Length: 121
Image (cartoon, rainbow, N blue to C red; front, side, top):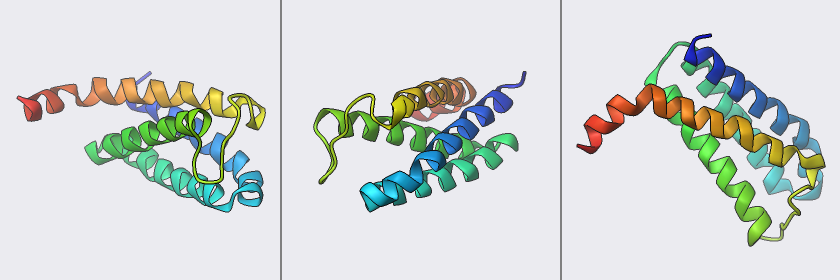
């Protein structure tokens, strides 16, 4: 299976998880719910671009996945403004979302590593 197809499936999983959780987060803490909507839209844009193998899609997807994973951990460890969750809240879907995020980040690194090495050299 081509790299971009697997990456697109990881982004689709992220979209599904975050859209599923959006309504309860909009009710509980609106700015978190809005963040889920924004992240889902950005993942959808990245998904389309990754399927076309555009570098911008890989970079956008990596940034969104890293940001979502980072904010998930921060929201559990130190909390966000007026928002501190347990690791297994959200029916553990937050924990489950870390998998597709990590896989996408690895795939983005594999796809972009030669370009990134050239830029960093």
